Image (cartoon, rainbow, N blue to C red; front, side, top):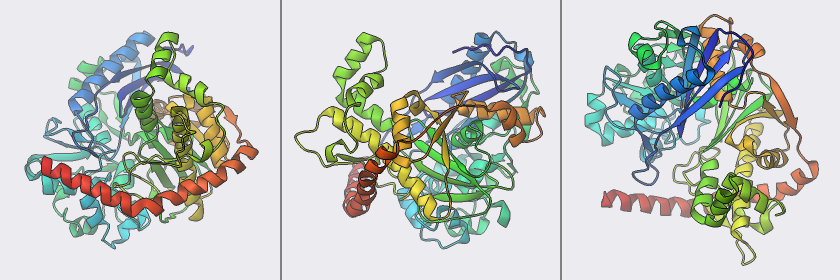
Length: 526
């Protein structure tokens, strides 16, 4: 994809190591997009609930994407004045002193550490305010590190460093190991208001030795990690010494790219999963959401978070497993299979004739923080067709989003509007459904790929083009349009939203028992 920005530079690179691909975007200092390119890589699921990737594939895709974007924009690498890279978070890399991974990265969606998370959840340490005193997620950094220590002790011992994926990328770019305040806080319990890393908490849960291998220095987003190393510059076709600004987790960099840098709005980052993040003036906490995290995005503010593990991934799963005729029609017409399916389900009324889907295919992040949660489809009748099921999955995703917003509201966080990015924004129908179910207007920005724009914002701060992240956002992020909720449809959806919210607590003991049994069987077979 290429787009003329009508400017002469200087230029900024935003790089996003997402779940399915590495995207690179080239911007001028006004936030105009010159070009964006993506390079895919694989995702392995060696067991149920597991997910892994090869960091070498990340790096190869990063090099390829940067090269493609420079060629597409016909820009010389010498004109790049700053860059920043984000990545998925809760994605743990164990590596040696040169950055070579000792095993595949344990991905954000991986919930193998459910036993470790359950034991960590027994702690009453004050650090646990970040998860509202509820269960600790099997996705989070301490859970996965404890799993490595207990289940792969050789890897745990031999690794020189452990890092979340954004910090591994920064290390590969610069040769300097740092931690970013964003993922250290939102996934590692770091709290600058109370001394930084809660070492006594880590000691209590059995990770007393982990700080020998975790990055020691914690940097704010946009702070310069180091200049681009000569080795990385040669591979990327860039100038050595370009300031590499500290990046963070992809969702929060997307939040910056959406301009959500003050209280009142919530960023809705859509794709394989959904993440909802917003800013608060004070440290609030409550059961069913995460935060509020100290300085995680903007110094002096607090970040709240909710999320759905499986959203677009469930729609993709159903389309490719059960909708072969739609896939064939899409191929004949030269359109996306989702466009065909959206046409087919457009006339189905709200509630799908009583069909409800809970989208917990890979566990639940919030409000239950339950790695043993699994998807549910209920209310089926002989009247229902595959199109009804697909539509019900769409509604289930929207119900999950609205359920999270309700939970945050109960703790005192009031969302007045959403600002959206990601794959779901390609569908006006899906975004209108989100607005109708939640009852909130949804704003879209000029640059659809807010994550790579957020990286460019941080790069601009690191390059001293702007003094702060909010200053850069004012100049580089612009709104395009807003959709309003339909009041009548919002009212009609509330009954089904209530049914969705009540269904998993009612089924939870049985779902957990079955999921636990399956995990036991898999362990024996392995």
